[in-house]
Length: 275
Image (cartoon, rainbow, N blue to C red; front, side, top):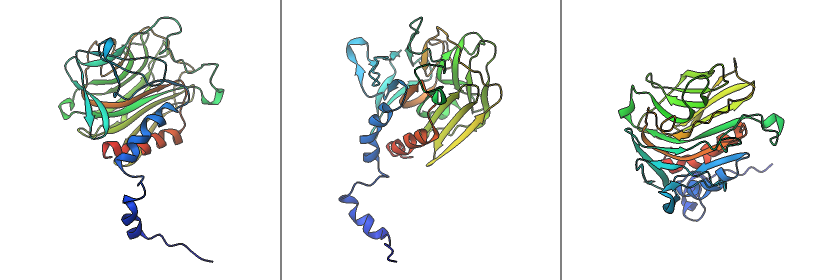
């Protein structure tokens, strides 16, 4: 039997001729397509395209025009090849108001048009939380007021510097807390997933690896439908807990994405952030 020996030195020599998978350029050209291909995609905001005629709204590249309004002049730019938006931690955030009945953001996790075994909700993106927020409560992605009857979902960094992901049932706020800590001044891939009556999952990607924390007790069969705004960097239409730092490549899906999809998103985009 003949074995082919991998020649590492030859691979390195040929990097100028054959694109290397583990490089920022490879991630950059693949990122948007990867997110646009997510099943049940409800919104994708890479923070690259801005709708100038509408007050610099962050354009939704899912094709559904669920653009986010830039509140109090959050600043847009780039981190090497990655498009980013930066919040000052004072009053800047991104917002989209609830549209009433059958609203774009009213994901219950029981949608009949989704294959039963794949129903749920997943959201996330890349975050770089400033060390100025050490010891502060800050909201990362919310649709609610963190009240029992006013929250669909809630994702924050607590004052303890642990991450907290909760979902609303109308009677309680089951969630995951105290198991995933934040590394500051570095890029983190943060994903929250709701699997009806089964689990809440919090996935953290950093230093080339993914860590998953799961809560299986008290998980509701469906999420609460609320009329509260969808916010990145604050909550309740700018009620407070403003994040200081930067963020990029946000998505929201009306499906419980499988582990392999979340892993692939992380691996396909992390080199844009030098992770």
